[in-house]
Length: 304
Length: 299
Image 1 (cartoon, chains in turn yellow, blue):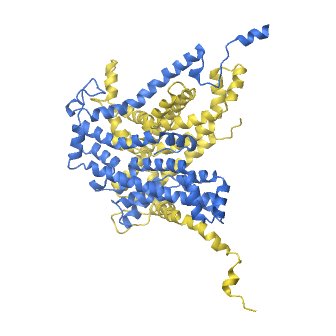
Image 2 (cartoon, one colour):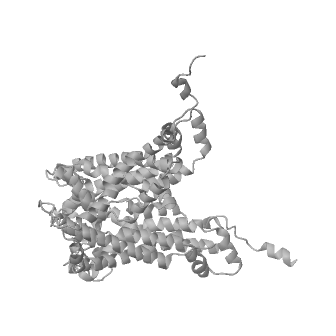
Image 3 (cartoon, rainbow over the protein chains, first blue to last red):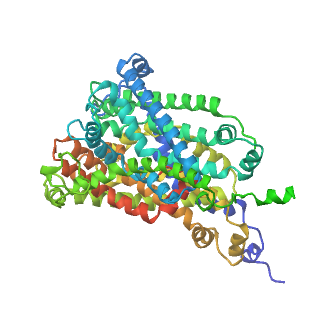
């Protein structure tokens, strides 16, 4: 009787568990290299940097503990930029939600050409902020801008739209609404198309008029979509930089100076990387708080 | 008798779109809706029309009132000036933008689809933990990583190179989330059949799952390309030599460094925009569906 060789024995023996699972993990290896190098790593490293007086040009970087955060708390320019940014974000989100909702409710009725309108409304969203800024800086130019041309045409007095403190943030907001309202518009439209038509039919039979069906059916059923839009839009517009960077450079005075502009100046004009990092974490904390508040007020389940 | 007369009343077929319904009331509705929507559409298009018209207007006429949307003497002077201006290598900027955006798109599609396949279709211990771990990073705004990533790039001596703009995109999370969702909707049976036919796990991913996910991959690809093409902040930080700039950075420099000629800036803006508008025109269905189904932003 011939002895069974080890090779023969291996046939029929199940593969060890780790051999079977190894390829599954291999699929993840490339991503996790990037993940740790450029996402998770930098998040932790950023916090570490924020504990130091980290001037990128100097060899020694003294440890400060939470000194940067204390300085931030007392920094007038931080609070001013925060005030500007909150104002800008609130106006922009409000404008975007109202205009997006208004346009989507009308487009949902499918007037002739509704697909062309849908296409047009989203067009500005695909532009770069740099392009948008260059165009709208010309539109709102004091001497030869498009807006002043029409203002003059209807007989009103022309204004320094981007050169006056009381106008600058609302004008930047208006520009941003022009640029981005196509996004909430499409998301609202998708939300509206998801509301089952029989609900409206039933209401119509019960003698409910259009305004009532809008306030009692459409708005409550759009709550989750609205929450999604308000949260994502607030986060996006709270990080505003490009519009100011191109159109106003934070002026006049510091009246349109935003948090991310301040971050840019601290980090890349003054090279105070530690302080800039603490500023970034301040920004993150505010975004988190506002998101939670939104969930508190707009959250909650919707029942059909 | 009474019942019969009631059936004579004009009924509205609500399954038809508004404008095909024959009642007068609905035609009035439709007219009112258009009356409200058309001004919005005009306001959306006007600034873009203004950009193109200014780009083709002779420099000595760009400040003229009344504004002419169709220039009386259209000219390519601004474009010619832009292309030949020694300090504004706009063709090089465009090349940079193309190289960076294409590489970023290829990188994101490769890495994210591999990862999404593992998270969505394979089973192994720790899978859900890892997925949630990755998702939680979405809570932290990207601004937090700017400074540390800059410091890392400086150590690697990748600042002012394509590397600084391309590689960080590999850590993107959103595509994983999107593709995982899509992969999970593919029927299992197709994969099982492939495995019986002797396909390995990679073979199944490559030959079955990817081809079936074309539309999701196109949507992700387009959004990634647009996002990278349009990005201003990170390239502004990571690049400093003139010939390494991408188009948006070049455009912002043009705006700041005292190039007071109107036509020049508008011509540069138009050159930056045309590729984007072409892409939008070709892939509008994917883009609009992408936003409506997944809430992708496109920036």
